[in-house]
Image 1 (cartoon, rainbow, N blue to C red):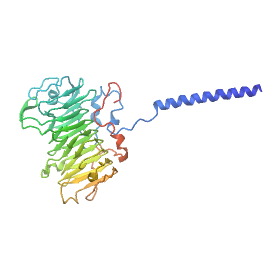
Image 2: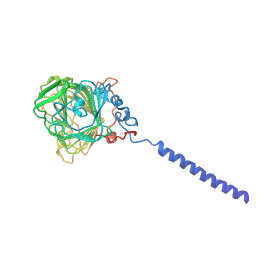
Image 3: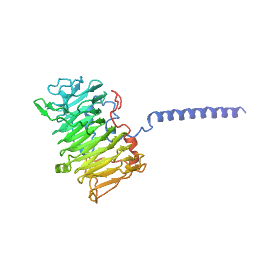
Image 4: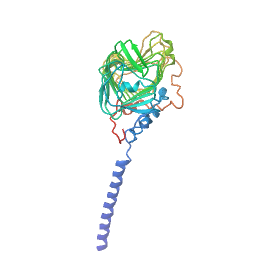
Length: 385
């Protein structure tokens, strides 16, 4: 009987020990080994690193698609914006305008949260990065950003909204040049005759004209991880139907979130080529993807949620009657609430990326997760972002 009692006691002790041990290892697994929410290929390149604030320029290695070669200010000094003040003709050191007009490469960061109300359009020189990480930075309530005749510009992590047309008058574009400008249209970001441009993790809303225009033979552009909302004509790619120089235009539009209150042009493409991949479309009032003058569009792995209205269920719109041979194709897209894509043309529309530019496009059902952090991120120094 005594030996039986000992066996029962030993069994009880071992059972509790095993249970505790299993609980210990389960808690360790829960704490350290449970996979986190998947990130898209751009974000996973840098957001998991806690040293992002002291290694900011590593961001330039993370772009994919046609903007892959964009350096921004990677090989320049860090320039710190300390004041939201603006002078279009004689900008002061410490202001954003003073940094973006310099002739040397610069990686521009912000000392604190600020709202910058520009007095005229902000003309950005070549080899510049505007990096809003670590601060809440807004360019708003005045003219906004012009990227004209330059190369290698990165705009990351800022909010650009409520943009107004620029005024006729003098604006400095470099340390040695002040020119008379005819007045900008009121775009949030205008890319004009420029190459190697990357616009990433920005918030764009409520501009007088477009949120992003890419025109006049601009090429090598990636637009990624942005949040668009509350606007009519969202994005124009191509100057006009007769500007044949836009045939060189190659744009990658990836991991963006087109939110509520948008009407059309997400994007509208003229003449050139657009790879529209892994974007989330919450709604549209007229159409999502449109074009004219025989552009080539490849819609791949997007997530389209049509509005509840019966009429605008179609994702696509052609501004022409003889569009049947235009090369517009859909692959791996997800269509919700009656959304549908009308394809056209023959042969492959897939992007002819180089090995460095290429990336794996996820199936459309993954897009809500991959775009869940679109727009500026609230990054804390010393922690993954």
